[in-house]
Amino acid sequence: MTWKDFWEGIASLFENVLFIPYDALRKVELDSWFLANTVSWIFLLTAAAAFIYWMIQIKKFGDNTDVTYTYDENP
Figure (cartoon, helix red, strand yellow):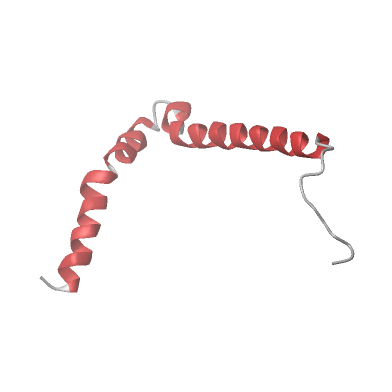
């Protein structure tokens, strides 16, 4: 087995197996734009949920008035 065979095997895996769902979505594109972009919609919704969660955590951190660290000015 050579390095060329190794990389061609990886290329074959991606082209013939892992891209099957994307090929199906590409064929659906002419029928329904929304259905063809389901992966993009899922990523968009996931990113929006993560952003909202992040903002809630930042607000909790900003509202926290407890001192959670010790700082000695004169060591």
